[in-house]
Length: 560
Image 1 (cartoon, one colour):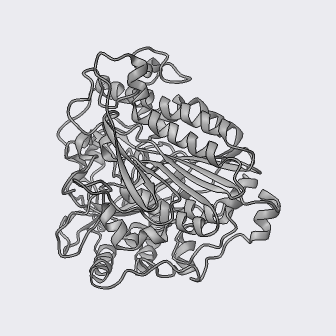
Image 2 (cartoon, rainbow, N blue to C red; image 1 turned 60 degrees about the vertical axis):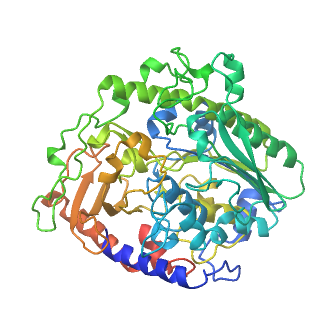
Image 3 (cartoon, helix red, strand yellow; image 1 turned 90 degrees about the vertical axis):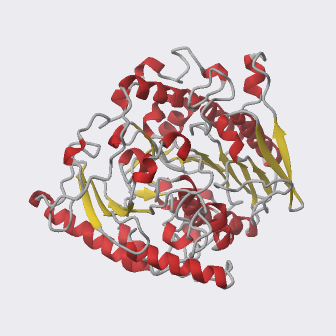
């Protein structure tokens, strides 16, 4: 593990298990932020704070954006962030960081599952999210306290599941709570919940029989259910005096999690039946045009990717996954994923038509996804572009159309939403509001972002294990820093909690947009490597600030 950060996180975990969790404090000192008067005058006028809709996809990779017509409309008419990344390319970790504006070492959510019992307490999943106070540090809590009607429809967090005869607790800060549980990964025959007066009622959504019509099957598809619930929320609250915040979280294009699909013809990535088969079912582009050429680096020779120690000597290669995908297998998976996101794109179009002129719609993903790149089969978890680079598209009042060059993170969204709601963000957040970039596409304050990943083979149900075939358990702990043109990764090749064995990888994206050759130790890049190494060392020092601790502004400025 990367010893310094994980040791601090582990200490905080032990403290969290033996002492009360620090509660949310509205009076906590706030971060430096765009003044409210500037936001009001340049973006919103003096009227009601705006509505906010966040559409958060699951495992969406940038190679799929070409297949989404309404996403393209958002890109053409609104703000598109070409350098948008997630803090860790792992579902639960990333979603927690998005909600709290905090790094994993702050939240204590380091992986998808709790992995208990152990001496440290839960290290991931819903159990860690709840135990370490993340629910009350989440942005929806502050928005609700500020008068917003807050709603969630769809996927929440890993291991937030009903037990036999019981339902999980409703997290604070949600006015409208409509989670869908992990049984929905397979598309059909799933469970959801409705919360009333703080009590949840579990609902079963049975699948039609195999002989049912395409229309009947698609009506029972989980994407259809999530779309219906989201549009019902928008219709109900469109004319309210109070503003609303809605998080819509489809499961697409995540893989199913069982070996055999619910229906005999289900592919590994199951789309609705209306989106199967023909060449015209990949949105605005023919399915036949989506192929292995959309997966840069898929056939890369890994002999020049081995990590290196500080002295320049070669370390053992950690990418030792024994299985490779053929071009045909990769294309089948990629096209199935493109077909799968058609249901999300249709929902997105309906959302854009349903909202009024005082609403911001944000489209992004919890992480990316590789299909045969990096010698790792299918999956995520790496610091490489395929896994950490995600779409970030914004439309709404006062948003100037065009591409933004600023390097941004999903850490920034919590503070962005608070800024739109005229709230100053609490000092425990680590991001920066994107609101100043809405009205001015030329704003370019930050040039770096950090990635923070912990090695921990998942114990218990982890939906990502179903398709990764063990490849995710090969990815070591790392911290990394990314600029527009380079990536420096500090790996910890010792898998134990106690030891440390640092090795390095450095990739230059100037001429090649993927990780072709590890150039750590190359004199040509010595100055850039030294600069980024210094940034990682400063990042280590900032890792002492966890949970509700105020983050010094010097730590937040590391990305500048």
